[in-house]
Every structure is written in C-alpha cells, then in structure tokens.
Length: 230
Image (cartoon, rainbow, N blue to C red; front, side, top):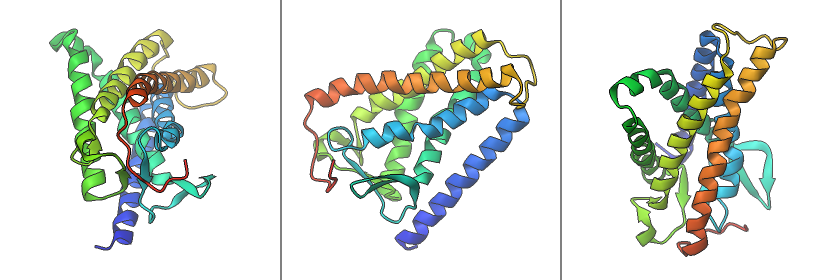
C-alpha cells in the first residue's frame, strides 16, 4: 500500500472510531463523558507546542490532511491526530472512571500504579506502531534517546498523562454529582456543568504533565535536524 493510501486509511479509521465514541457517549447521556472526549481532542493545542524543535522535535507525514486554519511558517497540524488525542486519553479516562469502584475493591491504592504503567507501556507501544510502522509522525531525536522510534522520556509523559487524567477526572466527577441520565439539553445547567467539569480535569492533567516534562527537556540535548522552522 502506498504512503498516501496508508494515510487515508488511517484517517478513516480514526474518524470512524471518534464518531463511534461520540455516539456511545450520547447514548450514555452523561455530559461529563462528552466533555472528556472533546477535551482530549482539543489537547492537540498542547501537541502543537510539544512538536516544536525544543521539545519533541516531531514532524507529521506530509500526506495527512491538515486541520484548516492551523498553520504557522508552513507548519500544519493533521485533523486526524487531533481526534486521536480524544481517543488516546479522553475515552480511556471515561472507561477507567466507570470501573473505578472495581479498582477500589480489587486493587485499592495499587490501582494508581497499574494505571500509570498502563499509560507508560501501552501508549508507548502504540506510539512505536504509529511512528515505526505507519510512520504517521517522526521524532527527530538521537538514537540513544529513543526506545524503538519513540523518546524514552515519553514513557514518563504517557504514564503521567494517563494517571493524572484518571485521578483528576474521578475526583472532579464525583464532586459534580450529576443526576442520572442528565442528557444533552444545553438549556440545562447540569449539562453545561457536566461538559465543563468533564473537560477541565483532562486539560489540567496535560498542564501538569507538560510542566514535569519541561524539566527533562531543559536538561537534555536529544535533538537532531528536523527541518522545522520552530
């Protein structure tokens, strides 16, 4: 399969998965879940900053279709990757919070260790598939800083993101105490409250994880030439 066909197939799979997730969320009638998934997609704003030369130093496959209006000095951002962020951290957060009572009974405090490793190992393995096999994006870093085709510092980032999304969302959503079957009528204060409180923990998790990772990139010098202007 040519690179162009691979990218189009990837975009189709991501779009279908994201649409299916939204349909499932609507059927659950819980605006907290919708807020989390949508917030995850909006986290492409973080990735836009992370891909710069002094952080990830990453570039995307040129055959991916760009997100309209998001461009600077010729650098664009693929719309499919934005949706993928919603699938990577918004949806898993919802699923993990749904089964949090089971975690409490079976694992107790060890659940937080398990969820950190789920993000650290699972997301890093997925990234290796996306970068090494599909070549959707590339990290331009020295070989000694990579696990396969992914920076080993991403193990920390992915673990922190998964854990923080879970902890902050679980606590906030319990505090929100929305009524069952809230639905999605925007005339309802509960719906607006749910959308906002579904989104804020995800964004908060990304801010905290970003700050932690900045310390690493402030000390390291892992980069190679990427051709990025910034």
